[in-house]
Amino acid sequence: MSGASLVAPAAANEPLEHDAVHTRKLQTELMVSALYCGQQARYNAFVRRFEGELVSSGRELKALFVSRHGATRAVPKLDAFLTRLANQESQRRLTLGTRYCPDARTLFTQVLRLPNRNLIAFASDRAATPLPQGRVTLLQTTN
Image 1 (cartoon, rainbow, N blue to C red):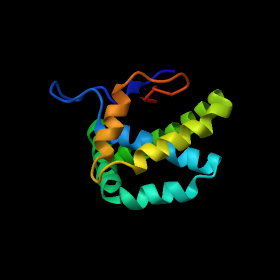
Image 2: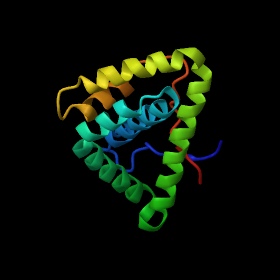
Image 3: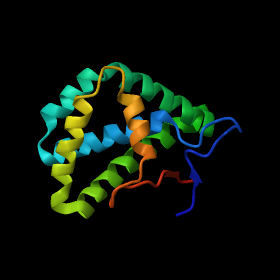
Image 4: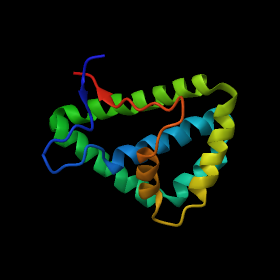
């Protein structure tokens, strides 16, 4: 696959990974697992509880894409990225098989027990830990 990494720094002092990317990856993981594992009520509770952080993080993610790709190309690049995240999570579901839903229920429990205003920190801390087999880490955008 050819492409430039989404999370490559635009400036020397910019982090290689971005909290908004981690938060959206977590949100996508929960969304896909909610649909596949019958956890829609828990996903809705997650969105209601963390709405402020999700909105703020979404704005940061859009700004990140604007800074990387320019205002004209940011929206289609962001849309493609979000679609790719969902597709990768669906593929992870297939890879994990019967382990997927129990793992998803555990993740929902962890997230819904977080103190208020801790979602972004949780998502970033989780991204920094070694990944279990099957978790997709590729964050590429196509040229």
